[in-house]
Length: 108
Image (cartoon, rainbow, N blue to C red):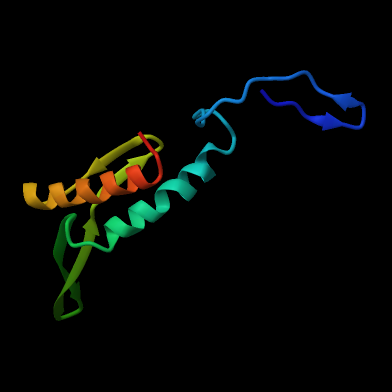
C-alpha cells in the first residue's frame, strides 16, 4: 500500500498495482520507452521483410526508373506486434531476439 504526504496530512492508503493500463495518459510514452530499443534492434537486422519497388518515370523525352527499398521487421501498436520475415529461419531469429528482450525486461 502507498499514500501521499500533503500539506494537509497523509492521504488514505491505496494499493499499488503493477503494470500499465492502456487508457492511462502516460501509456504511449511508456510504450515508446520500453519497446523502442527492441524495434531499433530489429530494424538493424537483415531478418525482416524487404520491399523493393521500381517504377518508370518520364521527364520529357527522358525515361528513368525510380527505385525505393525498405526493410520492415515488425509492425507494432500498443500490445500487438506482428513480426515479418522472408523465411521461417529468419522469423525464428527475430523471435529469439524478442524473447531475449522480453526476458531481460521481465515482460510477459
